[in-house]
Image (cartoon, rainbow, N blue to C red; front, side, top):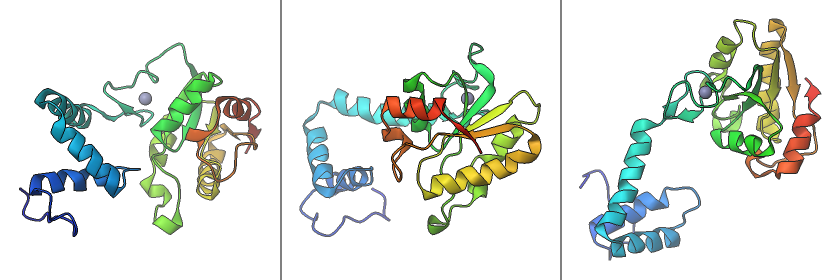
Length: 209
Ligand SMILES: [Zn+2]
């Protein structure tokens, strides 16, 4: 066992490997201490094959999934399936904060162009500046002049707005049309949770930035 790891107080009764599993599960988003315990004991009761399948799926995803050199989305092929799909409109790029936002926009079937994932938003509170985002990679993609429109589809909250404004200011000198999703998405929310119809409308009625 890793020497640097020590069980959290109050879990001394669980055997060290079990406590360690609980601790690791507890780090996952949305998993509180109680859920972590339940999951750990569920895994203990699972067959060896079931437990191994889960462990291997986690290892495989870490080994095989990387960022697409073009759009920065998670992929196991490079360029990713979306970037290499020639039936998609190569002149429009929709810029999103997270890979999950692509799924939300794809569900609407209202965007037929390409994507670009920034991997976050500008947040002075959390110390995230533009240099930590995949902005340079976006500028690189616009160099050859094939892209004529960039749709800023950042989250409808303060960080998303700030990111959108920052990127659009950078793009202005390139002569590319920059639009943003129409207002109407619930403020403060995540694109990921917007309903398909609202999101499709916001895309269709996008506005110049
Ligand atoms: Zn890609």
